[in-house]
Amino acid sequence: MLVGPTGGGKSQVIRDLSEEMTSLKKKRAEKFDNLVYKLNLISIPYGDLYETYDAATNGWKNEVLMLMMREWVRDESTQKHWIICDGPVDAYWIET
Image 1: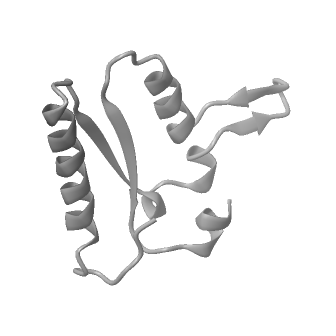
Image 2: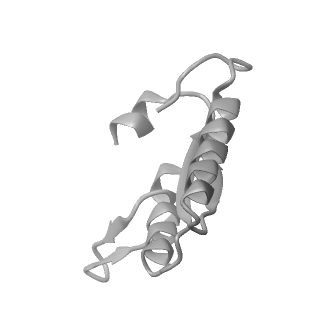
């Protein structure tokens, strides 16, 4: 988790890490890409973010993060999938 003030360089640290990981993989002659998905959690209602239980159907409803993760586990490429949760730190979504 990167936490810091606006303009403090958090996004640049993520870009640098991604580029360095790619550089290291190229030195090993492996194909490697990072897929970065940036989400502003404040803009997504809590109920639309995680998997939720639907008592009417007695089943689970897949939401944004679960749908992304289900897609990624089927991906057999060497790509790394990164979720960047950008925006103000909110104690409620950190605890959940």
